[in-house]
Each structure stands twice: as structure tokens, then as C-alpha cells.
Length: 364
Image (cartoon, rainbow, N blue to C red):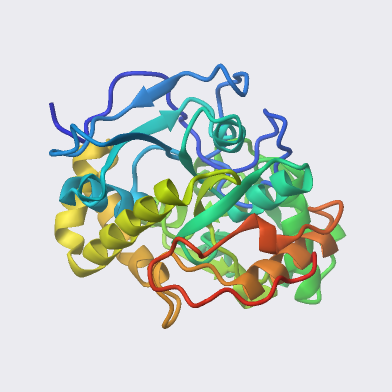
């Protein structure tokens, strides 16, 4: 059996943090085409397990739940699996695909998965509700969410969305984000027509139903659109006032054992270092685990690689100051009803080479 082959089982045909299908209310700050399709109870979700890396037949069993189908965002994971980085640290890692992409947090909190891939906004929402989960590693250390428009629409800044139709998936988070972007750029959000296109972001844009999208990823939906022959314009969030945040994070329960979290994070860091140095080999491994086209994953991987490291900090590092600023922004925009102690929502303690943690910050 190919160690990265997926078994046939229900899996999400849409990916995104944020559909309010569980006890964790969702912000909807990422790509709506990643949104969950299948309603399921938080503890009764069906899982599709992928095989283990060669040589990992022995070791402590560990479950890692993805946020969606294997793609470029998961490069560090699949490089670590194929390189035997987890096995070398005594871990027998099984990757699982959820049938509902809103369930990673409650499943980890309930002890049904050891680790999962989730999103900083969703994690902060969960913490606000008292869910005992924390981020232990950043897979993608900057926002992927963005505004996407066809070049033919001549949209180069958010306030130019006034008088236009903007497609979103209809979540409160999408609306709050759109309103913020337009108003921050000096526009009037009331003059923007927000069109709920559900999961059909890409078809809505290329079909002319909307003039722009909020919620797509610049390394995925924007690439899909361009590769279908529609040149597009991308407006990234930090350019227009949204504080930077870690789009994809690996989460664990607050009670996770350091003896488990430390070698797992070390394996991820080793996988990320290999993926950054050997993108062609990593692409081949991802293609073995995925049904997406080589062109799509290859371009996505190429765009994403610089985002794995945002500065001198090591792979996986999460800035406590950035988390505090983003949490405060979520309160400002109404995405969070109350401040969250971001110092309790994340830890770099398991990230190899991470600087010592500063003194605890006050809630955002």
C-alpha cells in the first residue's frame, strides 16, 4: 500500500474554518470553498485514515487530523511522513481526513484526535467559549485569505468594491471582514452588494455572477481561477489593515503531554525544512496523497514556500505579539464577543529553536 494513499470514505468537498456546525462558533475568515458539507456530531464524525510512512510500524500511535484534502498547505506533514521524521522520534502517525472540516477543535478537545490542523481565528473563538485547545505549531505563518477579482474588473483596492457585487459564503465572519476592508480603505460598506454564493466562489466569479470574492486563498482559489484562463487580481489582507495571523496551525489539547508534543513538533519542523529545500520531491509526495492536478499543487507550493518562514524565527514559530494584536482586532470587528487570553491559546514551547516565551500578555 502506498503509505500516503487515502482510503475511500466521506471527506469534505469544501474546506474552510468556520461553518457553525459544531459547538465552536465560526468566524468564517478563510476560503468558503473549504467549508464543511457534511453535518455530523462532534464526536460521531466518520474519518478517512491514510497510511503510515514506511518504517513507522512501531512507536506510539498518534492521530493527526487534517483540515481538508492533502494539498500544498500540508507539505511539512507529508515530507515528515515520507522522510520518517515522526518514526525516528518514536511516533506512529496516522493522518485522518475529517468528513466535516469544523470538527477538528472539538475532536481534539474531546481526546478523539491527538493533533489537528486548524486556523488561528477558529482557535481564538474556541478559547472564548472555554474549549481547552491550543496551537503548538504554525504550518502557514501568514494569512492566505484575500480579496480576488478578475483583472478585467479593474479592482485594485477594497474601496473600489463600492457599487460592485462581492461573493462570500454567507457567514458573519465574511461580512465583518468585507465591511472592515472597505471601511478601512475609506469606503462605505453599505454600498457593497454582498452576495451569498455558498461554496461556489470560483464559479461565481468566472461566471460573472459577482465582481470579486472574499474568502478565497491566494495560493489556491486565485491559482485555480488563473489556471482556468481568467487572469486575476489578489488583495492580501495585511496590505489593507488586517493584522497578520497564522492561517494554519497544528492544535492539541491543553493537557497534551510534552513527551508527545515535543517530538511531534520536531518532526514537523524537520519536514518543513526538507520541503523548503526539496520542493520537487515534496510535490511528488503530495501528488501521491492528493487528487488535485500537478499544475495546481505545484503553483500553490511555489507561492506558499516563502510563507513557511516569516523572518529569522524557526519553522513553526508563532509570534505572541501578533496573536495578541489579531485577537484584539477580532474583538474590534465583532468577530469575538469578548477578549481572549492569547498567551493561553498558543505556545512555542515545542517548536525547535523558538526563542524563550515573553512574560504573559494580558487578554486582547
